[in-house]
Length: 218
Image (cartoon, rainbow, N blue to C red):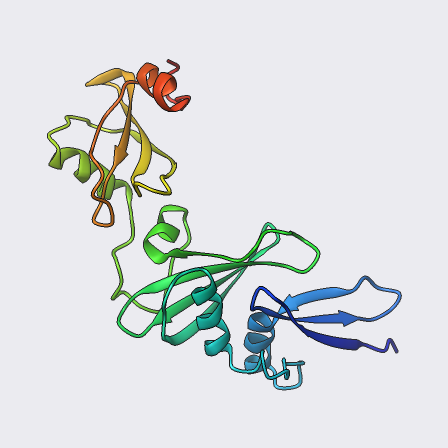
């Protein structure tokens, strides 16, 4: 019978981890968020016990504070793992929800990061604990945004290129074969941005922002 050794650590990024070793097997690591979720389902599974790691709501609030976001945490939901990162949904008192991403031990050196549930929805990550925050961003959200600025576009496809850090506009490529056969790129502002709205052809987007269209080549 293999002996399992569990070692708990509290890290400078604010997230605690459990490292589990059963030689000669490879050491496995997972966060205290994941351990707390597993322990709730199976009380015989190990849980974090260091003072910095025991109150998971406090841990989540502290990590968000380090990232510049104030949140009195009301609830948590460990969402899973993808490409070496863990995803944790955090519901705050007052209605704001966030998705926290943290690196798995040994899988990544990226620091923790947080995004709103609205931004998470645009990346295909769906928050489930609350619908009191901003509505999820959908295909129709951006089509309607174009219509609000009187841009005619019977879009058949839409591609998210990213969100601007400073101006907070969502940069998207629209495929509007009837109205814009040369392609359409629009940095769309929603409620969280006061930046100007603009539209560009694929050629203009390539020259101004170095954006390469995928639906229509500039």
